Length: 260
Length: 346
Image (tube, rainbow over all chains, first blue to last red; front, side, top):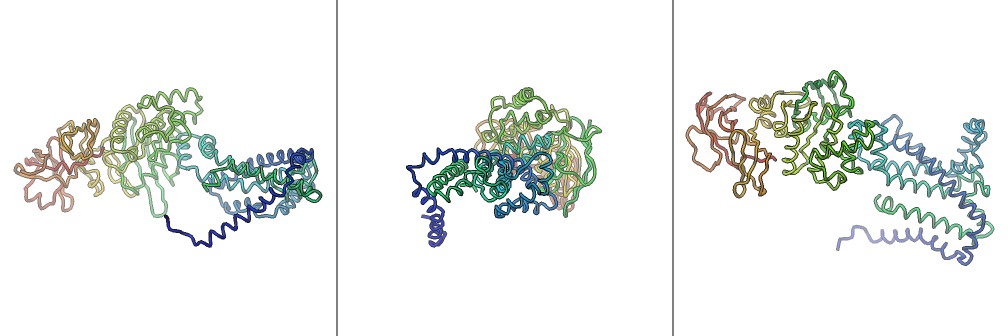
């Protein structure tokens, strides 16, 4: 047998840590009014929230990818002055309280915000719309997406990209035929992570887009609302989110759970 | 048609400053030790690095996109089949997919890989992968073919195979071929002309024969001033083989000899390992030749002696030994070396 590398106390502490994560989730399962589950889930308000959640989270993922892919490429494949600063700024929403992100979005893209004014003149109004909810979710999931894409890019051998260029490929051709196909699994993983983050977004969404049933009320917002009047129903909705998250996590399998 | 290179570049303490040219149909070897600046030069010629000053001109024209590169580390695209790897330079030039693939298959067939067109790189053997790399470098009929250590990553058997293939391919190639290598055997067996690169500078240029006969620097003497024999190698008895060159035969040590003949092999013998005698030597050496001294050159306390034996030999001895034998041009001597001292390199 291999000699133990760690003191026993570390394993005890680690087990306590795992329990810390697992216990509340188990409690959720135990406390759920299973007999009412189908009834709760079939309520039209739940269905509406689910549909809004899917629309908002998928829209947010698409937006974050459109913005995040170029950022990840620029950060990992070029050297420009202030690169470290740009990287820090892009990652900021990761540590920012989501409510603050919502307030920031309001002052930027809100009706009276810096760009919001111009957007409004163009007929685009984001606050308190599903689009706004997607923007808020994209804002907070962007850093995770950029981090995951950067990890993927660092796994693509730049010598292959050099080979493509010296064999006559344009930068665009090399990117689309070599770099992107080689990081396809990482792109998929990054999208799942960003989507899961967008799906769970609460603070920035409620601040920037409000809590309008059928328009901006996503599942997390619905859970929060229902919790005040009907805790049992909130438990069921929470379990629905746990299930969706587990599916997302499972679809990542080897990528981030094991390899990294 | 010709290639003219005159570039200089400084990085930290290293300075590369070279100029040379090569003609159409010619294979020029850039031979140099590690750290001589070969990789830097390859990067410049492949268009991946810009020199501080100078130019690379092909046909009174920039090299532009007419380069085919065989990379030292192959760099096959792992997510593409052999065919799509080879079709890549054509696709990059906006040639339609169907035509690109059919040209790629034809090129693979020409290089003896007609049955591996759909294999992905990780399923190819070393020799097969190297053929795909070569096909990919040739498929768009580049005017400059850049071969960066094309034999370095191969085992003995594949080396011999690819060396033969390169010889045929380079003979048919109509553009300028540049072979970058640290291995004098590659340079001497494949190139029409050798450019020796040391410490970022060219120290000697000439035909392989000239470099071998009259190396001008210690490096060239040590590595290129070797006795090189090429030809068919056949196993004779346990642990040795007979190498038949166009100019005579030598016996070589061949410990891991396969049962069959290797049609295109090379062996080297260091000049210092060749002993000279005035009378027929009696001893264990299995390679004994007799012939006149064709030339003598003194380098410090050493003398290089060229012998018109069959095959021709270069021996290196101390000035004292040369004086003791009273060697002059035309003196008939016996030369010998042991089979063990002939190293099979492919």
